[in-house]
Length: 618
Image (cartoon, rainbow, N blue to C red; front, side, top):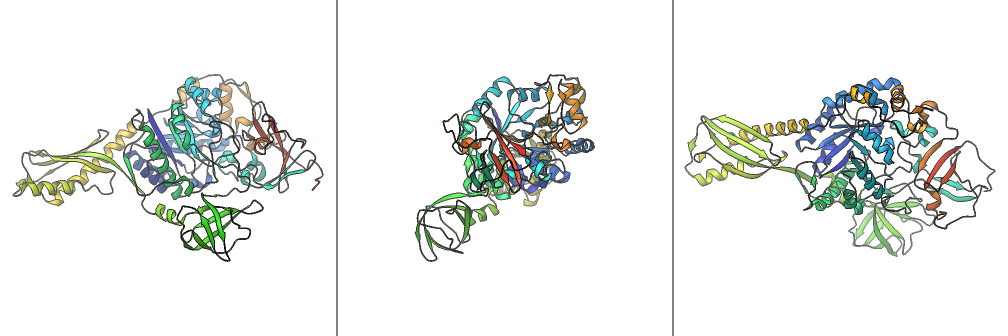
């Protein structure tokens, strides 16, 4: 079975580095309609990235995964045609209205924004023309196993990165607060804000806490279990992250997957082997602490004290002097490192290292509240960041090189580990070498100079009838021409394997019934094509999406498997009842929200409470 490591690319340069560090595929924002409005890229850049990726038989997926208004649908369809012509391997989409349009034969992936959180939904996506679904982040290992048994569609799952507290595609908080819709690529991330929590009588339960901000997801301990459950694509979140993050995290998972695949029949979904010049460490780039979320069991998973990166845990303060601190840790510290800690009020506070001698350091300022025993994290590792800023990996495909005679000259043939070939011929005089051993050594040296190409010489031999004296310039020209032809052969071979989606006629003939007969605002229907899609599959659209209707009354602005009652120790199932009467309310600035708990489904909803529900007692 092929296993795919899928990395984010904010831009073409990051995409290339993701490939260099072992990604089997990258996903990148298109010029418009990507779910990260700040991470769009030109068609020319995407085409250049696709050519580079295809050298390694790696893939490029374009995100066109926002909801569309009627007037935007033709533009989105035209964009998909241009992306296909640029060599993109698949389009990640959210708006199901696109299935009613005349699309190019591009492979379609159902974005996690389409709320792929149930067996019925995944089955439906497979039946209406998607070749892959990107599972909801809340999917457990047990659910993955059930999905694999019941379907044959490709299953993609997140393994690393930031978490949305709401089910993806089911969050309308940003749209309500600021008109910035997460479903249209411009989420304002209100989940990362601080909130006050009140009980039903107006008593304060929590004050100025990041009650909806989750730790970052990391599935490092469960990759084998995910493979066993049928996941074939392992996705790293982070199209807004920096280059260092992409390099570090991609390299980490490349090494992890390679070690997992040894001797068990699995193989990487692309070609080439990586040589790394640094040791990847997930804790040394942006992270809010880690959780495995719902892969196995529910656990505390929020970052109540901060929404910021805390980085790598170092240890505890061992000694506090007037302007110096001694830290009990094994990690080497560097001048310029950024350190942080939680102060006596529970807030994150940071400082820089001005000087360091062993484990004793001098801060740029002496923070108040630091005492012996205070825990310290490093959220900016200067030495590691400097490493990441340089060359940290190279990726090479093995080739065998054979030099042979032609009637009037020489022929050079390169054959790579996938069987692709590139050849070059030249007419030349063939003067026998006076020193055959030296001539052979010169030939091997010149033909093996593959430098910054995608290739590395595994075996070089001459099958000429005798050993010739050949000028280095002639050998270099043969090598360069053969490399160019091999590159083109690899790209052509890859494009020939691109999967194709169903034509419009087949999709329109498909009347597979949807698993509900009516759909409301949660189906996110903003255009006539999406309404037609649901009608064709037997479902009536009773209400348009909130970006179109603007009617928030009684609507869940968030639906989340994360539960504040559980997080704060009040879960009724766990025997943690509270005397604080419900409903509970969240307050942020002047905005009030009511919490609704569904213990049967183990879910929490955040609903609009337009005015203060009581006279505050604080």
